[in-house]
Amino acid sequence: MKRYSLYYTKEAKKALKKLDKPVLVMIKAWVEKNLVNTAEPRKYGKPLKGKFSGYWRYRVGNYRLITEIRNRELIIVLVDLGHRKDVYR
Image (tube, rainbow, N blue to C red; front, side, top):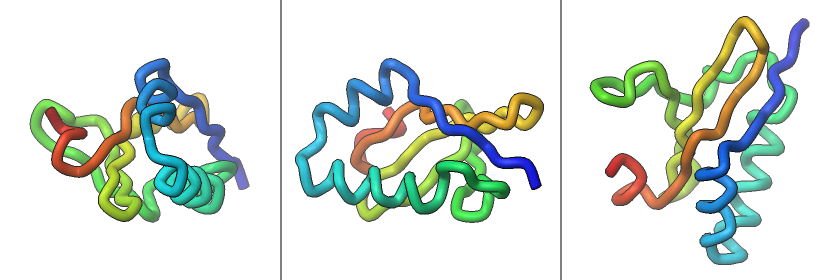
């Protein structure tokens, strides 16, 4: 079974640095458990619509992870993340 690799954009890395330590630990633990080396990245996510069409959203507490799933390369790209009230702006 083929597994997906996870990569971060510069924006995602910048957003991670801004998070409080407890939130950062929670998000990293969720990502390690559910996205790193997964065979089915869509299991916990939901496809986005409208101007975000083509991206997937993952809910982690009050935070949202926005990803792009590239099937040919078996890559999940974490594009952005943030609090649910701000991430889609």
